Image 1 (cartoon, rainbow, N blue to C red):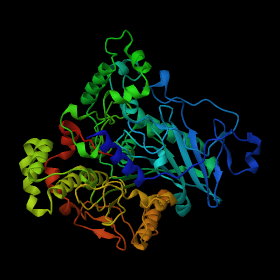
Image 2 (cartoon, rainbow, N blue to C red):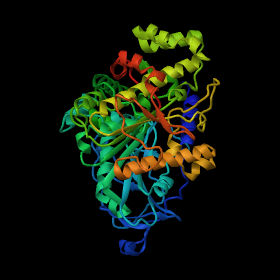
Image 3 (cartoon, rainbow, N blue to C red):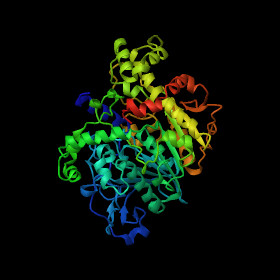
Length: 550
């Protein structure tokens, strides 16, 4: 994929999740003794922060939750931030974590461990807390992508959005890093950042009107994968009580492959023969590290089967931060048995197919390159004659194989052990933010449910928003389900009643404008019996290596 195409893809997704405008970071604010009389001033455990007051909510942006992971702290677990005494101006987002492409006007930096808080203006009690973990395939994105103010007001919750380290800074695994670590592991720094943010929330959120005993983590795609992994990670114990996973299939990078990739990065940086390999690596400028191994997480290069297709920066099972993968954990019951909302979108794969051109010959070649010895079976299951175009056939395969059926599999593993509420988002006319080059109707593509949960004014201003009456109503209903779940662990109080998933009934709640209802044909629609027979979870986590724009 050319650089110009990469920029267009990233920019389109950024517009889909466009940011609110914030004023420039100004001088530090007044001292802490005004906090009792000024609702824009809050004392944290490290020092005072001054946010902004709107008519219906308060906002506190760019609060550091850990020390900058720079210099000697690069490729180490997050460390505590130093205290401050003068009030920090929390009216502007902190820098986004270093990533390969600057989107819009982001200020990318390794000094990026910041969070943002949105709370209703005059809560009469401590409110449920919802901590959003952004997507971006673990290589792009930030907490800025979603403005939580309207969700906070409509749902009467405190919303927290966070940054975490990305790409090689967040997920580099190598034995030289293992050797300096007290637990003899490396990688998963981004997951540790998420835990550090949750620990900050537990210590401080009551001062912002949130209840630390009622914390929900929720995220989409890579953020959804993170939610699933934090349900397993020992370091997240006691930090949340509910979980919402939007389109987050539980895929990981095999650790052996990750270590080979780490070796390649070290060699590319010219550090393999240095007297102190780690010191050499830490001396390299940010952009040099980012550019050493370009990430493969782009829609048009999905599912590379060869390392030349690019690097994959994903979490790994390391035996400490992550003792086992989702499939094994959920099968064996070795996970945090919190209530879960788990679901996917009806047309996930159309995002990835939107920039591709595939004819009949290209369709066969694509299937053979992605599925190898199973290619014939896949083409028999999805014959071209059943679809208007080859690109729609490929988009359907992508949806079913890498989202719908793996997500359903997770639901079925969880259901006997905890309350899990299954859904499918199905707005066929959801707002389109991608530039289509092949005439493919986007439908309910990957990530498009996010504006229904975060219906901020900025979405409307840029035209990438839910705007028709039935869509606005659907957004209100989804917000009600999500926030009531955060409050009680049960998404009740909205019609129709959403009951826990039962494997025997195999019903999911369909979210469509004007028609929220149960569907029992999900598995048939998405060919799940076929994909389960191919053991796609094992294939994707191994040789195929999932790579997409999370």
